[in-house]
Image (cartoon, rainbow, N blue to C red):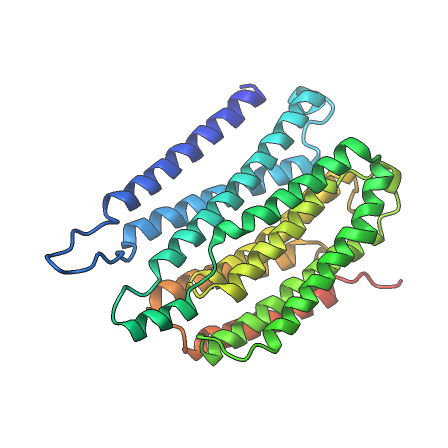
Length: 346
């Protein structure tokens, strides 16, 4: 079976799964109100959540399979891996899938935020609803267009060395600076509708993702072959995903925003794997397992599953202490794993 057939079948399977999930949600989404009763959005049923989890796990498995196949080398000397156009086609399909996934997440966040709004009531309730309403997800389209413009600028007007300098001297420093400003704004905010437990969890995850952004800058800064820099697209995906996840955590009040944060931390090691594959950076055979990306990936994956269980078990976890303890444990283990990943000086 050719590469095109395999990828086409995978895309078809994912499309069918998405169609099933959307159809299941749309069939039971609207409940006919009685006379004089306002229309209220319905909570997702258990089978809708199950279908969404199965779809997400399927996408993660497919991404891991192709990432490992690309990184390991496979049958590089013969077969489909020997064709440059096949490798280019596969990389293009993965990039399109990543962008489609980001659009799907933004669409889901906008729908969830709209469903969580307070129904119209008296004048005082309406005024309070206006003050706590989440910002529209459509506002992120402007930032997405800016990212696309920077990508086009780098691809058409700069050589690989110029792209590396642009990313290292302008984009990454600016992103880190804006992230620090966002944290300062979060610390000086006078009023918020969220509970103390929610604020504590947001602080933990926002600090962690900002540190990962700084690690991305250091990763590029240590890269020596800037004349052959080819990770411009993946670095832009990292920065765009950082701002999307930060917006979900800090600016929205939906229950699933912490799941988005753990999903980001789970996919980030795989993004680094793709970045290294594009740069043709081989991991030394003598490198210890603790110095690879897999300990951090497995840690984030375990806590992603725990967050899913927490959302299903705890119906009202806004002020529950168990998720906060879980997140604090994750931050401690994440720091330990990062320290253990530093190669010894022998």
